[in-house]
Length: 341
Image (cartoon, rainbow, N blue to C red):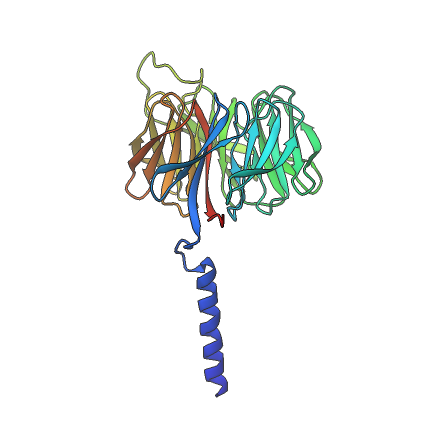
C-alpha cells in the first residue's frame, strides 16, 4: 500500500469513528431526549420523552422539588428539594437517585459545571450560596449573598453565577479561589438570567419589568433595557411583581426566548438585531424556559395550568402541551443513554 493511500484510509477510518461517536450531528440511536420537570407543589418529577411527547416516568424525589440542572453528557440530572434541604443527583439511564447532598438551608435553582465537579445552590432562607463539591458529595463553602434566587453556569468549569435579589446584582463565583470574582449591578431586583458562552453578555429579568436588561460583563454595567409589548390593564401575575420569570438563550446563542407571565406567551428576541422577532402562545402562567441540546425544541413550564408547552423553535409553534404535576417550575432536557435493564 502506498503512503498516500495509507493516509487516505486512515483518515477515512478516523472520520467514521468520529461519526459513530456522535460527531455527525445526528442523534445517537442509543440515547433518548428526556425532559425533566420539577413539580414544586408536589413530591415528584415528571420525565417526558421528546420523541413522542409522552410522560415515560415519574420520580419521587421528596417534598417540593425546585431546581433543575443537568450534566452536558446527559448522564446526570440534578434537583434541589425544599422539603429536606438537599441536592439530589439522579442517574438518567435509570432515573434513580445515586447521591444525596445535605445543604445548609432552603434551596432554589441550582447550576452545575460541565465537568460535574461543582454545583452552586442559592439558600433562600439564610442569605448565602452553597458551593457543592460533587465528587466529595458535600458543601465545601458557603458565600454570603443577600436574598439569593438563581444560580447559572455559562459553560465554564471555572465560574458559577448567583443572583442577589437584595443587592440588585449578579455575582460571579471563582471556583478555584472559592470567592466572588465580579459583581454586575443590574438596576433592579434580578430574577432569572442567561449568559453568553463567552461570558461577556448578561441578560437578566427584573421584578416589575415586562422584559429584561442587557449588561456588558467586562464593563460591569447595564447597557440596554428591552421592554416587551405593553401588558393589559389590571393583569395579575402568578408571582407578584413578576411579569417575566423565565428566559434562556438558544444553544447557538442567536435568540433569547422570554416568558410573558401575564399574557401566557413566550417572546423571541434576536440577539444580533436586538429586536423582538416572534411570539408563541403557551399554557397558563409560563414559568421557566429550557432548550433541547440540539436546539430543536423550547420547553416551557406553565405553573397555573399544571402542564408543559413544547415549542418547535424553527416553526415558532407549540407542537404539544403535556400534563404534569402540581405547579411545575424548573425543567431541563438531557440526551440520556437508554437503560440496559
